[in-house]
Length: 475
Image 1 (cartoon, rainbow, N blue to C red):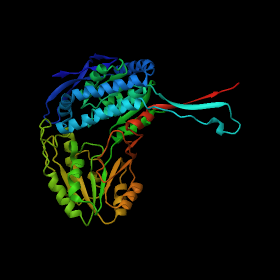
Image 2: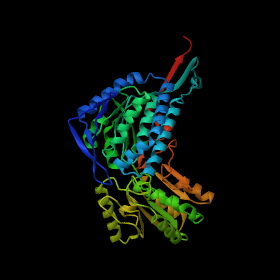
Image 3: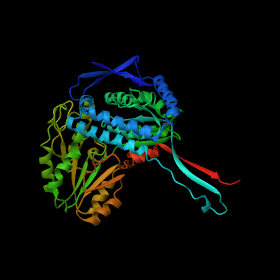
Image 4: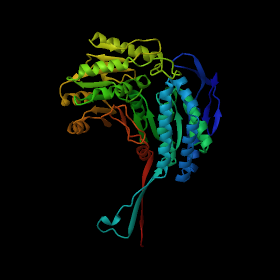
């Protein structure tokens, strides 16, 4: 059995306490994971601050080269890293390889961003009475960044925090999700090999409830970046004070399907958007609003496509959907489905359970106040709802307090533009599912879905301070 350690100041360090890590699909113990103490976190932050004092002086070229090397090493180790995802997260191999391809791209974007951090000149003489002065802006690194990451994309979501932080010269203390520490610890080795200075990356493993206060309130921490639940995100925001913060808090992504849509061409894409990684994706398709004229046809084809999906072992290349992250999550979503059924909802397909899996589930005859509709399910469940007018569909999409991504399928340009303007979401995707994301686009929600933006270029802005410099040219 693998026994992990903390990564502090470029060295592996043991801890007095550890916890068992079990595979979501088998329930077997796969590792003993080091549990960091508050004192360990404090040492990590202090070490990161010390490393920052020198790392911030490195050139953009040097930082870019480190990130390019990380991408190259990951490309060489991709199969090995995909197996880590299958073990600790129950992510099917095909999905794991896709995540790793995206992660490699994310670090490449970060390397390129390191060399494109610019400022601007400010025309000082535009103000009456001011002359013989010049002014310009530049972006400067903040210092120590605390990064707290979730289980569902343990390589790529980590990359969205480490990549832009290192691109600008910050250092990072990373606390990965308790279920997926192995992927983060693998990155410690990769960054070391790529030439990242000791101390620039610190990794502390353990429970968020034990460590998060120190991670978000320590005086040397200058920014907190968190991806996870809304309840935890709100608590963090209350504690960060004047530090910078980015919160990505999930959603219950909606899609409108207009009657002009060529249904047969989009069904497979819709099903993939709903059930990838067992629906445990912040922008997983959860609500589908279909025009009444095509509702029956769409639902029939959607159910047929869903029933083709294979539920099984994540190490099996034929598996489409595997275990949910924890048996408690299976119990939770089973209770949500049962509650919806008692209120009249119909299971069109799925809702078959083991202790660790939930089969891809399609629900109809749902109501807006059912948990499976109005809350984030984070499970392989989608609801299909008919509507009569586009205005009605947009209103249904906007009823939610969660608003990360939303989408619309339509061949009518004016309807697409109407939806783009009126849907309340961080991103509106036209003619694709809201599960769409590439790693250089701005990414972040509105309402209760988050605060701030990720996407490398945009994260670089959030991980720097804008500094203004002015000089009088004559005495």
